[in-house]
Amino acid sequence: MVLRVAALSQAIGVPIGVDALQYFAKKIEPCDAKWEASTTRAFISLLSSGHSLIGVMERLDHYGLLERIIPEWTKVRGLPQRNAYHTFTVDRHLVETVVAAGDLRRQVKRPDLLVIAAFLHDIGKGYGGDHSVVGAEIAERVSLRIGLTGYEGEVVVRLVRNHLLLADTAT
Image 1: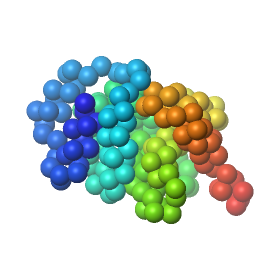
Image 2: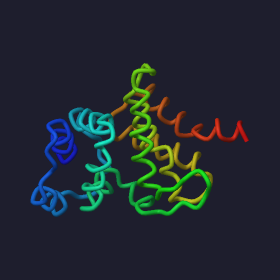
Image 3: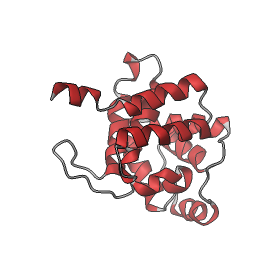
Image 4: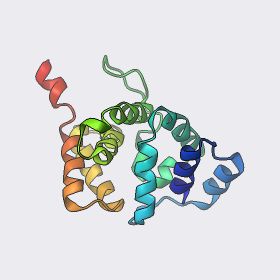
């Protein structure tokens, strides 16, 4: 429900009220159950909303809602990065990447899968090991949970697993 409220607030340009956020923070438990199709549509709509996504995600995160919606978020929440490629914490970098990926939506056949993969591309960083491999495993679980088809999930997993290919090839 919180994703549907967030997507609606984003669509009409009205922030989610503090009372609503506090209510959701008290009522919503971490969820690893399969999502309803309407929740997945709301999630994709939210991820596709452009630069204003940042403010919505900050509000959801401030109230601990992102980690209840996507439990894997807990490990990257506020996680610092120390390298030349990243200036943000992992969680903020993921959101910024989603916004940047949104600029490509007219150039790809499945912009919905692109923004989901962008949201998950570094999710493995909080778990140790090769974050691309770990992230691909997490992306597979999340893809199943949010109701992607087998093919759609494979695309997301492949994008997450191979997101460093260009940087690795160029260096």
